[in-house]
Amino acid sequence: MENYFEFIERVNSFEVPTLDIDVDHFEPSESVRKKVGLANRFSQFFGDTIVFDLPEDVKKRVAEMAKTIRVIAKDCFCESLHDNTFHMTLHDLSNGEDELAVSKRMEKNLSSIKDKLHRIPLVRQEIAMKTNYIINMVNTSLVLTLLPKDEGEYEKLIALYRYFDEIYELPYPFTPHITLGYYSRNRFARKSGMMLKKAVEDYNESGFEFVLDTSMLYYQRFTSMNDFFTIFHLVE
Image (cartoon, rainbow, N blue to C red):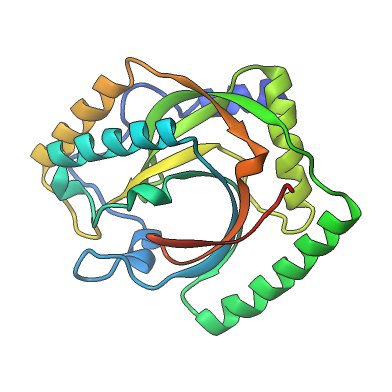
């Protein structure tokens, strides 16, 4: 797994202030079509995940950012995310369109997590973070990327990630982010894409710092990208 310097080198290769999106020939990813229906509203999509809820002031700031970008480039997105869904995913687990198949995997995840928490309880701690840039995440969503404030904060965060990766190993590296919105399942006009680029790049001129607290670390399940519910807190 990456050390801090490898992590920074990797994310700096694609987390840049200019929005990397093909405004002339944008094609939403297959993931969008799984999560968003023909009416451009979220479809049923099932899964479980480990997430940090955000401090209320951060959640409000992120929600305002997402709404402002949507007003400027509304044709680029499907339905809005509810304000209470904004979070930072620590570790993805199972997901898919087949509720029965995903449910079986989720029950296995739940049992494994409870067993590990009993053997190795997590402790409360804070992790200092800072925003990096808003980027296009593989033609699926617009996300606000995040960085630990320094190497020490990275080590705290990645230790938590490893804790859950030992339960459900992922085939891709950890890129901390907050999803601001999912793209429309339809192509959008060049004019809308250019407006989106301008709005994002204006935001990318500034950033802010905040703190994640493991008292707000949850095991959650979802039935769509707008419907998350907490099963339990991970730190007592």
